[in-house]
Length: 112
Image 1 (spheres, rainbow, N blue to C red):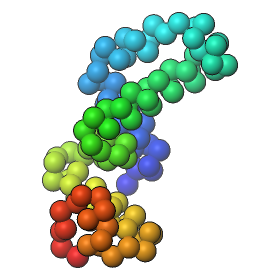
Image 2: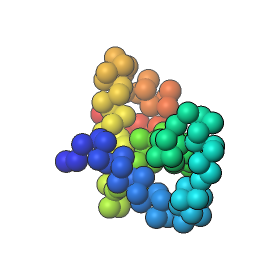
Image 3: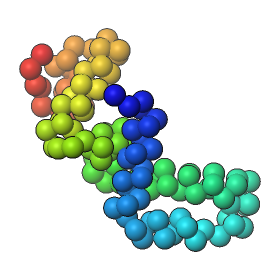
């Protein structure tokens, strides 16, 4: 399996391909805006891309990592399985019972 960073970069690439207007905006950024933020053009571009990605996730009521999984999954079933697996890991790390975790995060309780 790919590393999380590789998965996220792949998801960002897919996201940009799905949003050509964003790609055009990012490709024509004003260098003075980057300079005002004391960033290189690449840093500024990357920051704006991540902000757009986060906003897209939020608009779908997803965490950014869930949008990453959604974009890189081959099917809705694969996405659901991978998402559930990560949620289970988070619940375990947080020391929460699965049912309690599901209630907190509005998840349908699947098999334990």
